[in-house]
Length: 603
Picture 1 (spheres, rainbow, N blue to C red):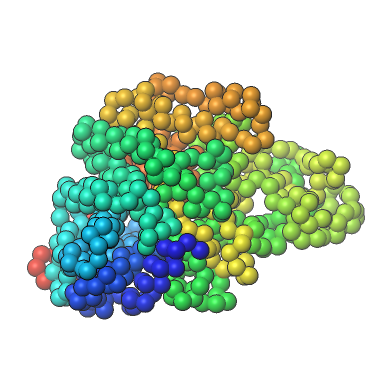
Picture 2: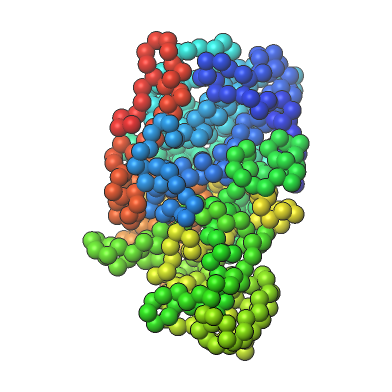
């Protein structure tokens, strides 16, 4: 495990009680008092506690749904539910997973910044501690302002409970975000440095978040200078990537190999582990949501043990022929089936997108050249249990007897094109699995996202993942820069940055050098190809399932338009006011002194 886990998580577990509530609660339960920050251990503990709280959102169910459901990328899985998927009935009582945590952490950071100036440590150490704190305050306020708009703006440590609160304008919030991240970038080290090892905030991470803040504010105000600032910051990160030990993997799939979780493409993560001393896992306890468990691998996983059958296929009448015998059991490799989110493969019968679905016909339309579809989703499930079927078994349409061989025979094949009839052989072995083409994909059977899977986390296959949640990858620098250049009026430079990502996506280890060169050439675009929608499609291909989509659509003012165009569940309910989320009702109810705390329009 990385040192940041061993130090920061343990520090947080020791100094923060699990009963801490939002600083805006009328009965604060935080045990932190000003004297806590008068020592290096107290300052470090405060920072560690905030890192710990990021873990309580990224990777957990409620927050993940809030960041990805109700977009063009996902529809509701068989076990998914709630208004966050379709906006019907979305309100302050059923939204706001991170609100209280964010303000609790902002208050903690204000204490670090207010009292940490005088701690007895070397000047370089003090600057790094304070830079971490500024980054984290900017991080949380950037999430809040994108999600809720006007929010309470606090820069001093609150020690006395109050039943009054008010919202400050977005413009003022952005001023603080940009100030914090600019100062953090100036003082953070180029590379992870003790005690903030692993993939905590560094100079390029702060620069990327700052670029995103400029870009987002630029979209709000159509400010040329903001777009130019964002583009320059991304250029600087790329130009100095060797100083930062950052780069792209040659193969897109290598970015998601567990051994590379802390590698050169990863910029910023939220760590996870199963050790019970960190306070969010019980030995022998299975993943069930809540706490700070990373359940990311399971949310987009279909119930493969219940839906796979041997000697089954789509027949000439278009039906799935299934003899009812499962060729799969639940295991660690394929993960726990949660079925909350499924790729949006709805095929529109009419309208501008008649005959098309977002998943295969828009986002991943170029699958023969672009490798990201194959490296993001499972399309083949290999038998993990042995089953014997006689030639005369009921529903055995092929009339062949066999025994499945674990680790060899295919149990389920989900081709990305229509297949009628059953494949008879794979090599010299009879095909024994089911074939599920796109026309049969539905809420409980679909290609699962595989890039977050964790096959080696623990003895119990129901245990949560120990892999980190990767919030920012180096690829994002290129696509953020491309969007900034497009908005700044330089589509040529935008195309150049996008082409770096697209040419990488063309690479396959199974190709010859000549084949990879030809594929890269075929993936190359020109300035004329670059539009906001093209960039959004490119971000789907690159970041599918990485907590980015709702914010991407909101930033580019594309949420309502694209949801109506592609998502049949949410398109009928979404309205312009959904570009902001509802303020949690619990927050509104707490404010009983002074002016009422206002709700966002429409809720």
